[in-house]
Amino acid sequence: MTTSWESPSNIALIKYWGKRDTQLPSNPSISFTLSKCKTTTEVHFSEGTGVNITLDGTDKPEFIPKIEGFLERIMHRHPWLSSYNLQIKTRNSFPHSSGIASSASGMSALSLCIVEFAQKIDFKFDALNFYQEASILSRLGSGSASRSIYGGLVVWGGTPTLENANDEYAIEYPHIIDPIFKNYCDVVLLVEVGEKSVSSTAGHALMDNHPFRSQRFSQAHQHLSEIQKILKTGDIENFIRLTELEALTLHGLMMSSSPSYILMKPNTLKIIEEIREFRRESKLPLSFTLDAGANVHVLFPAAMKEKGMAFIKNTLIQYCKENRFIADHVGSGPKRLTNFEK
Ligand code: PMV
Image 1 (cartoon, rainbow, N blue to C red):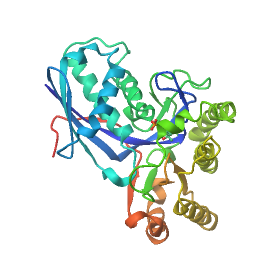
Image 2 (cartoon, rainbow, N blue to C red):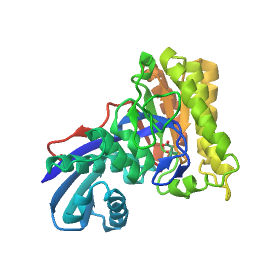
Image 3 (tube, protein in one colour):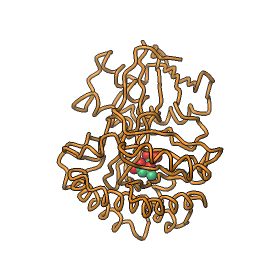
Image 4 (cartoon, protein in one colour):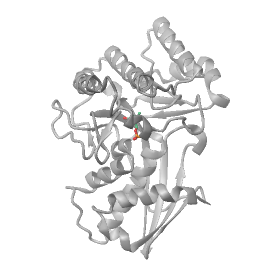
């Protein structure tokens, strides 16, 4: 039997950085789910054991240990997996070497395939519903993947100001938001392609003894509370202030951990300066956020798409590797597929 899903990547506005126990977050986070940056995965389940994986039709034995580690981590919830062989075919919409993390889209697509199959064989899982279970499994694959299970704005991690938000699985942002945040654009500028010098796993671990850890974790709760007012009222000025602060705080934490490290590149800073200057001069609400790498996510409302794209094509493109960028926007979440289109 075969199941197939496509699942998008996401970009955090308030960042998850630091974890405990089994991939539980040290602080709450909120993200926009993307649309075009996605992974499509098909899993063929048959009786037996073992895993095969292909990416874009090519065998990838080097991915097997990571997938096996993931399956071991979820086995306590899905013991039936021990008597199945999984043939996984996967494909990313973005180039593998683009520096865009494929773990959120990849782990969520795989988890959705597994939970759908569990449902088909009538396995009764612990979570309340299909998507909660898929979010828990995704989280066990890669923390931020837990948020890719839903479209729009998604929260992961318990926080006193949001009922139902919890550390185990992500939830759709439960309140009404100003329409300005509905089709928000996110253009990913590819500053650096290829593997990062320090993995997210190593970065999270450095938060364990970070001198600013408790201040950071309480700041994230405070920011989650602030962003809720911003989302409701469409307060774009404070949206920009807060999300840029979050991005630079994430990198500030990397620079102030021991050992310290820097993932931004000279062109990352050039882009940030250009964006701030553009905003000062044009008074248009175009801003940036960063994930744990050198690439820059340029954020702006859909209503200024033409001007935003013109600025990127005229000014920012010179700082991108081989002029590469991915013009994405907030999307509606994963889709179950009936055919794995080649
Ligand atoms: O899911 P991980 O372990 O790759 O961690 C991702 C962490 C950030 O992307 C930097 C922030 C986030 O909340 O997505």
